[in-house]
Amino acid sequence: MTRRKFVILSSIISAFLIALPFACNEQLREVNYTFSTDKVTSPVKLAFVSDLHNTLYGREMSELISAIDKFCPDAVIFGGDLFDRHWGEPNSVLLVKKLVARYPCLYSLGNHEFNHGDGDLIKLEMSKLGVTVLDGTYKDISANGSSVRILGIDGIEYKYELRAAESDISHDLPNILVNHYPEDFPALRDKGFDLILAGHAHGGQWRLPPLINGVFSPGEGFFPKYAGGVYTENGTTMYVSRGLERSLRDILFPRIFNRPELLLITISP
Image (cartoon, rainbow, N blue to C red; front, side):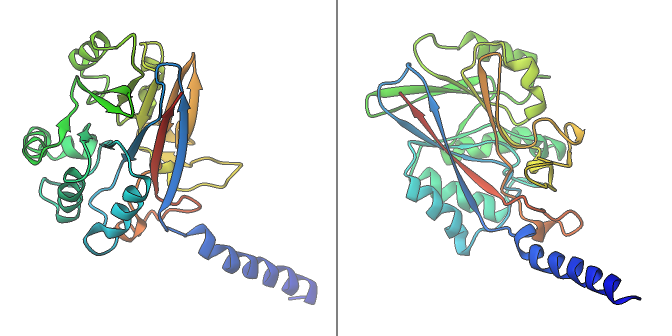
């Protein structure tokens, strides 16, 4: 090997080793979004927890709970795949028990809750814990003299749920739809919802910002359009969480330039 080739190879290896800690950084990222609307006169704050998959965040989930407490939301929304395989996974249940004692909590299920046949059981048990389950239903959240309407469905294939959610759209309040699957956006953006919250894509798992926003998602395949971030089409906005699952649980598909994130949303006049 010539000296020139050795220098080039050494530089490439050095750059890779320097970038590796940044590429694989899985520290919790708090992402703040502000959605402006003339339907409120004062701010309403929502914390959006999506795709946790029973991942541990500090002793007794203290890391995630502290981040939520610091924001002091008016409600916490669980956006699906809170559980990974079955009802009763300890980290997720502990998180729910601690948060429901502090805030109104709402829940729309994801594919993992249904994949293992636990969907109905999870809805029942979450309701027993004091969580409002959104499956074609809604709940109004009020704070500081303003209110927002949170609606939820289990996906667009549940047409009766979508019809129920459409019939509950308010003309006076901001209508926020929780639907786990971002690939449903084209079918939902003209329905009259002001804001849609989704997850599922895990940020495309591997990213190369600003060139590639995501390499693969389970709903859209390679190079997904709705991997994570903010999307506005036909006057409707969608926030897609990159999720909270960490690669320690899935070493075959580590996150690359794709930190797990908690969405902190302010509905503001």
